[in-house]
Image (cartoon, rainbow, N blue to C red; front, side, top):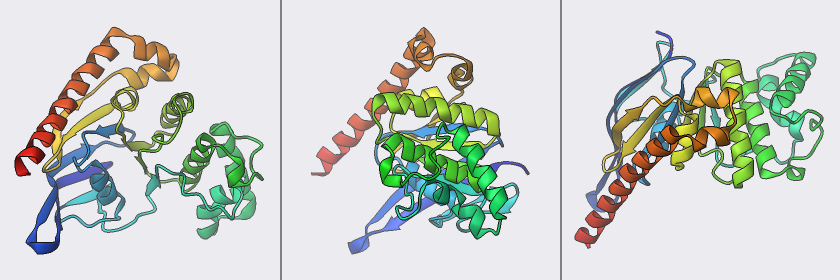
Length: 268
C-alpha cells in the first residue's frame, strides 16, 4: 500500500509515584502519498509526540505505523525531519550540510554537487554554497535545513514547528516556499504548528487534536493550499472563507484551553 498508515496508536508515559500521562489514545489515520497534512491543537494534545512516533524516534505503547506497507520501527531514510531550529552542522558550510546525507550514502561527488546546486536554487539560495551557517539569517538556515532534507530524497517530510522562530515576513515567505516545493516534488508533508492561520493556509488536510488524552478531534479539507500556489498568500488570507474557518478553529481551540485551565483549577 502506498502512503502512511497509522493504526490504533496510543502512547503512555510512566511518571514517578505510579502516575501515568496518556499522551495519545487510539489515533488512526491514513495519509495518502503526496498529501500536505497540517496538525494543530492546544499545548499537551500530543501532536509533537505523534510526529516523533511517526519519525521512529519513539515507540508507541500500542498500535503501529506502516509506510508503503512496511512497518516503521525506528528512524527510516524514507522519513525526513525538519526541526524548529535548523539543527545544521555549524562546522560545515551550506553546501557541506546539504551534501552530508548523500555523501554518507556514497553518492559520487559530481552528482552530489549538481544536486546541491539544484536544491539551493529551488530554495532561493543560489550562490550560498560556500557560506558559513553563522552568516545566514534564521530564515535562510531553515531553507538550508529543508534543502538538506530533500537531498536525502525521503518519501515523507516531517516538520515540527519549522517556522515558529521566524519573524512574520520571513515566515510568510517560507510558507510560500513550502507550498511551492510540495507541489513540485509531490512529497508527502506532515506539518506540526501552533498557528491556526498557518495550518489552514498550508494544510491540504488539517487535523485539530484535543488533549488529555491526545486524539483527533476534527478534520478539515481546506482549499487554501492549492489556492496559495498560484495566488498571493495575503490575498488568500483575506478571503471570507479563510477568515470564517480560522475563527471557527480558533474558537474550538480556545474552548479546549479553557477546559484544560478549569480542570487544572479543580485539581488544585
